[in-house]
Image (cartoon, rainbow over all chains, first blue to last red; front, side, top):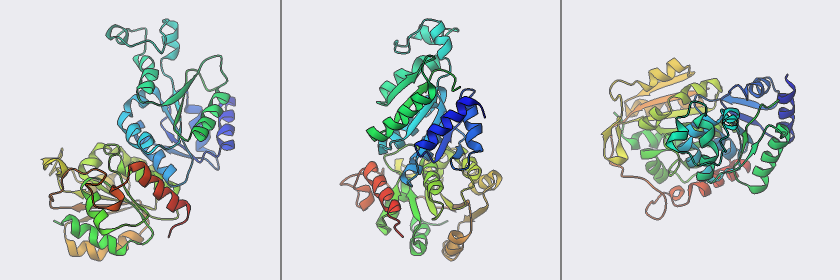
Length: 180
Length: 199
């Protein structure tokens, strides 16, 4: 088990996470690999990210404590599913969003809070998934924080898990760096 | 072909402690038959996400069956859920496709692929353990106890005659009790009933 995934798993265990629901990408793949072998936390792999929010909401209704893990592209795909399940029901589900394109966006000098323009969205050196992630979270009224390269990813995840519990509402952690 | 009433009445008769999640045109008819604490209408929610919401409840509560009454149009929106159900090995999950071939509540516009798409065949190909197709009311009524007893995941493809249900919502205009409260309130009531171990 890679060090980062092991620390993340321990954080999930401490917070009583029962299920990890989502789709892997290159950042979250070590976590998925670890959860698949975990004796207590169950992995539910979906076919499309929107499903993850509905499945997680059902898990919460059933009394479980799920964590959703999707890439930011999948978050954008999930608009109505997220709105109509997690947000509409007000399920306090933590959501880990891995940030495709954040490194390139930083290198290009683009701020995630910057308003997207047609010119920005077609630039080859900028991934539009990263450009739209935080603006979309703002529009959907989701509480979030971003884990930057200088932040500790496990500490950031712990904060998100605690935040969802304390606020009794969904909280998003945007992972703009590797987990390890 | 069955009517919605012919589909739901025997299910209501044999339902005991199962969670029942309804969508679209089944929601109002079921809500007039049943006022069980474990009824949840996926109404005023996410388009096409009733089946996966119900799957989540089933995975959280492997001790009891979860029945989802889904529309054919709703199912087509999230066909991938068939694979997710099988991958999750949800033996306590029963998915009933209410296949009337139309978007009934918006005025009977045809669903994509109507006459071609075979939901039972899709479920078999996806790997559902128990798959049934019913067009006859008596055959369905006789089969319900076995359908509920057999380990799943189970899919029931019910071929229905389109009804006359109008657009569905929540609030005072709806008579079923579970549609008179918000989705959030209804979901919390079901969660509380499950946590309390309601039989």
